Length: 252
Image (cartoon, rainbow, N blue to C red; front, side, top):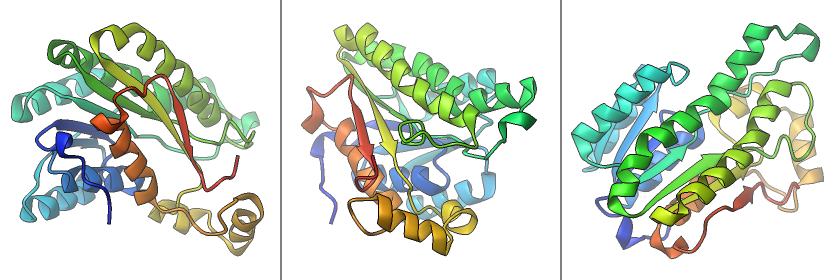
């Protein structure tokens, strides 16, 4: 059973990419804390189904369909969430796309698209919610990175470059806005067993690699990342900022 953090009850939480995978697990964990949970996703049908399910169970949830690479649309979505639920107190920048892209085939447009889908929106989502947090005198921003750049994974240079930059963004925001009581941390998941990963990449060879490389000889589930994020959002982590947490079963 997951821990309950009473201070999160009623807080307005925004999760990007919350309709599936790790993002869905994050949304579910915050709903279990009785937070007011908003999430943004481009995948409308599964996101609406998730919102309907959680609302039927008594959660206060708001789904905004949005392409996070469209920054004006992002800003409109944040404004709509604020109007619906109130000032945003927690932001989880989760959305990303780890599509492989051989270096020799990368065009300028492909490169820009990888930066847009994996990094750019993190900055602009933070920019959009910081005024709320400054007014409240506190807030928590959690940016999702990846262990891919730490382990030197190949085959997706745009993705790994973006994810390494998440740490720099996190530390810059933590330094700039700590004076307002805003905490900013990064979480780097390892190989997490989302539906997408299971369908695309988890082969028998991949499972052998997990056993060989992780200290924990088992698969890591999305909820295990989500629980760390909920902790970082809570007052139990009130002195934690400017940090980088790895959740990978001991791969790195």
